[in-house]
Amino acid sequence: MPTRSLFNGTLALAVFAILGGCAETTPATASDQEAGFRVTTVVEGLEHPWGMAFLPGGDMLVTERPGRLRVVRNGALVEAPVSGVPEVWSRGQGGLLDVALHPDFESTGWVYLSYSKPGPGGTATTAVVRGRFDGSALSDVEEIFEADAFTENGVHFGSRLAFDGEDHLFVSIGDRGERDQAQNPLNHQGTIVRLHDDGRVPADNPFVGRADVRPEIWATGIRSPQGLAFRPGTDQLWETEHGPRGGDELNIIRPEVNYGWPTITYGINYNGTPVGDGISEAPGLEQPVHYWVPSIATSGLAFYEGDAFPEWRGSAFVGGLAAVHLARLTLEGDAVVSGEELLADRGQRIRDVRVGPDGLIYVLVDSGRAPLWRLEPGTTAGGA
Image (tube, rainbow, N blue to C red; front, side, top):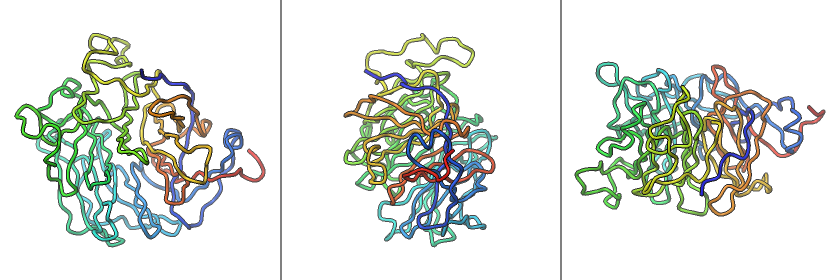
């Protein structure tokens, strides 16, 4: 059975950085001291950053929702954005979204971007491109996927990117504000899709050969997927998902599984009325591993197996946009057994969380002049 949220409250975290660069320790708060970590500001001045990726040489790539791909190098934000990024539809929740490296990036140079692509008549959809990155520009840029999800709505584009160990790319796509379409397998609204690294459809996708389901689809019944990550040491793909008013979810994404939106949900409409029949379970529809009531507005997702914080090994970290906190979930097997809010008194919206190659935790804040922070072991001298 799914576990309900074990914590509610507010937190804020912004962490993010480049390895080996200069960083400024931010004033510690009482909650930082109690948890036994310190926060360093690595760079500031990002405009609504959304996703990040670590490059082999120590640089980082960061997406800004208005349509810029930025480089963090030697502890500083490179002034000129990366060239070659496609035009984005930057309205509402739309814009430049996630960034990921090809698993063999050092040989291929491929960088992948998901974004809101403008369409005819003021519409937009979710799309994915890839280009070869040379340190300042993308070249050979090509679109490898365009979701059949064009609407005029500026919400629920998704879209996170995750590679498995076999060069398959998973892409999350929201319902685009048309909830019933999440149960329509003839389009990509409210789905997780699985592609080859060049956009081709894998022959072993679960719905290949069927006329009533799009062949790219891996799973259905998704509302607004904001986090997507493989759990280390397993082949499990996990996802975080915004509910409506309450009912945010943590799911394990499996092939050919329907996650129920909007037929079942632990949330309600924003006006307080039930969603559909107001039910949270139904035969043939998957239950979440964990859900939040009230909503925290889940965002990025990461799993921790590093050495810097041994007491956090095996934890899942989930950003909160409404409850403005970073949730640490303790897992036993596939169950959430406890939860903790980190940096709950900093009052920032958390857009993404990643674990760096150094075993430290990096988090993006969603604001107009956002900092990048890094969580490090120890406490700040001088106290809160």
